[in-house]
Image (cartoon, rainbow, N blue to C red):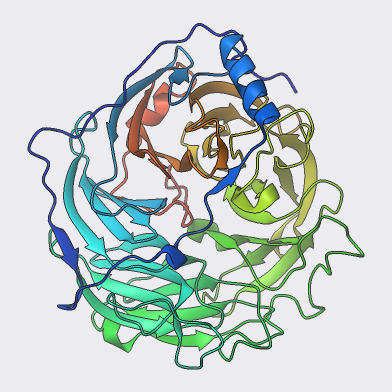
Amino acid sequence: MTLLHTTRVRRRRLGVATAAAGLLATLLTATNAVASPEPGDAATSTTAVSSQVRAEAEGAIADGDIPGVDEIVHSDNIEHLANVPKDALQSLNTDLAFQGRYAFAGNYDGFRIFDIRNPKKPKTVAQVLCPGSQNDISVSGNLLFLSTDSSRSDNSCASTTQPATEKSSWEGIKVFDISDKRHPEYVASVETACGSHTHTIVPKRDDVYVYVSSYSPNAAFPDCQPPHDGISVIKVPRKAPERAAIVNFPVLFPDGGNPGAPENPGVSKTTGCHDITVLPSQDLAAGACMGDGLLFSIKDPANPKIIDRVQDNVNFAFWHSATFNQDADKVVFTDELGGGGAATCNAEIGPNRGADGIYDIVGKGDHRKLVFRSYYKIDRYQADVEVCVAHNGSIIPVKGRDLMVQAWYQGGISVWDFTDSGKPKEIAYFDRGPVTLDAVTTAGPWSAYYYNGYIYSNDIAKGLDVLALKDRRTDPAKKVRLDELNVQTQPDYFDRH
């Protein structure tokens, strides 16, 4: 692959923008009780490194191979418009969703709502304290959905951590009414087997279906018993969300899924799905399910039907997420090698492991197949103190091209072209230097999404970033306007029903 390098690139020092003057957010709780974030809600985020690793990173900075600590570099076709640091919610930032002039940002401690009417000056509208990892987030109409995948004492936002071995522990989906963006109201919850690591919504006129992805069952966990070979499907009536309930648990892996090691060394055993992306206009979904990649039909949203299933037992360790192209004839799957806690963008790992896998969809109807074409991985130098992994991204809607913006944790943000499935190439980037040289640290963009002319990124450690992309190849996308965007519920940007 021919990719754009930043080695010895001319660097532009940009200070991290401070929050706009007068930005004093009110911390909200969904109940009257006082809730406090706990260390158990957040993943381990630092691992000390040797003096040799630190010295190598210092040498790379001195040689101009990587930016300095917290220094920002980017390609000439990217402009950094704004950064809004963390405020009341101090844990790890997670996913993003959009509606009108608002952006909704998940955090292990809860979620934050931004007014992005002026992308150069995002303003905080509300911060809701509701601890429970990962707080994966999506919105539809007046409803906001939040995933809880950490064992809690109850389903309230005042809950505390509690062992999953206790039957009374709770994990699952929370539902908020966001009619008043300044005062979200917690209105419903649904407990799901093994919690909700992520979720994906399938909006309908009167109801919202929610696909809940979770995994890692354990015989010692009363609410997460093996085998866990499917997903929970929840139906939420729009006018009565308090009646939300599980309507199905379709088995996706009747044979148990990928067995992992020792049969397939270095590959995760499939015990559920990590993430699902749906393309409602085509009644399609793609599942990233630990050791397996899936293509399935969602003509009946309560009863998804498997069309094809693939594995990569050579280079993929953990199937993490999926993205369709505009024509629904390709899927990009990501590999979360190292689980989001390791430095994997280096010479030791190489270009094919911890990469994106590009698959063509060939055939018609229920006979469609996923056919592997190539890998894409950033080859810009990343130090061994930087957690770098293929993570969440979205399509940039340009007719006739397959373009994507994607987060890579401390590998930064990559804009790339996969119009030719066999020859993907990077066309723009944004990157910060290491957050520290003393430890391998979980930081960098969790998600990077294109919405109504701008790239929005929820940086795990640094807060919300807004970028402007100025390139003739991507400029046509500025004409595409959406009222709502949940990236795992991909829209038909060009309305080709």
